[in-house]
Length: 278
Image 1 (cartoon, helix red, strand yellow):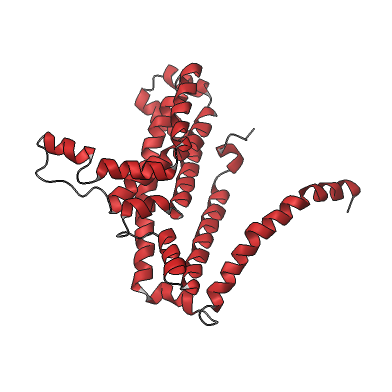
Image 2 (image 1 turned 60 degrees about the vertical axis):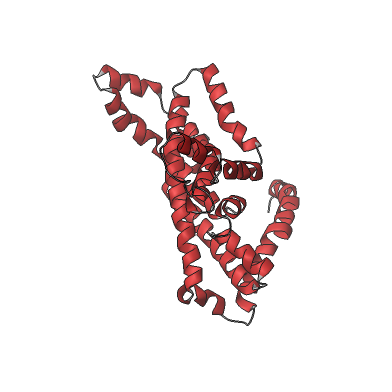
């Protein structure tokens, strides 16, 4: 090894040791527990195919994550498109408006949605006062409430990668299409949308992965009636003391996230998506 290369390795060695001690080693321990508790073997992983409760949690989590991702992408794309076409000064205000929700605690936002969506909340009281409903709707402590809270949290994460991708689109391409007589709808459908697709895919993967590990929002807005994977893992480990089953699901969650990232990285250039391309 050359002396120059040895110097670079020495520089990254502290970070590598920290990652190993505080990240890699605990994950390895979780993996080991999933194979050894309560008895050595693959008994915990067999529950993936034999336990209806485990399968129900997985299906519920995937359904909520897919719906959250789809809604967040639809709202985020419209917002990112509007920001990308705005002037420089207006873009700063738009981006500030997107980032401000990220500075508010997820716990505060979850309780705010409970206040708005509960049976005596502002939404139900407004609908009752307008005569649109005869009795309060069940808007919280179910899947609907969880999706509302998760979409609210995820929209900024959907906007930022799409905005980075849209900013790389050469405005001259849009002007050329307009000069050739294309309508706004045609320009969007044939030029802008295909060029912004890497950002759309990046946002979809980012939102989906974040949604898989959500804990606080589903716990509060689901009211314990709708369990997602993260809350189910906490229940198994902290309350029922079934470490093997909980760590098995945690391991599968990590595997699902890494697999999603690996597949996505083969489809899209990550540097181009996040604004680092040439």
